[in-house]
Amino acid sequence: MALPEREFYTVEDIYAFPEGHRAELIDGQIYDMAAPNFAHQKLVHLFDREIGNYIYDKGGTCEVLPAPFAVFLSADNKNYVEPDLSVICDRDKIGERGCNGAPDWIIEITSPSDPQRDYGIKLFKYRTAGVREYWIVNPQKRTITVFDFEKDQRSNQYNWNEDVPGCVFGDLVINVDKMYHGER
Image (tube, rainbow, N blue to C red; front, side):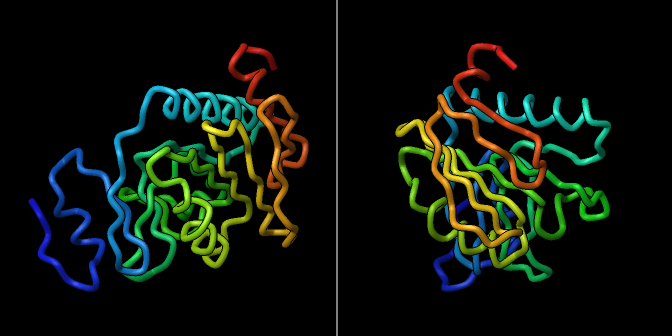
């Protein structure tokens, strides 16, 4: 079902899409999402497993939730995103429809069709919404860009063969190459 052309959309419009149609809503604008490819999904799985195992091993209570999982960044009806991975430590934010408020840590895996959305629009929205840590994983360039919003530090960029330190979890270190080869 196509939505009528207009300048402003709401969360209700997102829920009116047919099942399987994925889109995000940022400041009332709809952004269609392409179906993820194998490499994208493999990375989501590896990060989900690595971070989930870390939290489990530490006896933590944070939730690691892969897309599709709705995140309502603000209390309005004009913002709805589906980060590739959301780490939520305040369980009171989790409801039946998704996360109400900013997750602690978001990981986005860029798509070849629109990598700039992650580096621009989402970067700004996540920072202003109160996300503490944001990683942009770029499979095409084999890089990870880390933003530590909590400490308001500049970003750092890492290659996949480098150890990437976590911000929210200070003793967590992730190396994408090692994850791919099953090393811990």
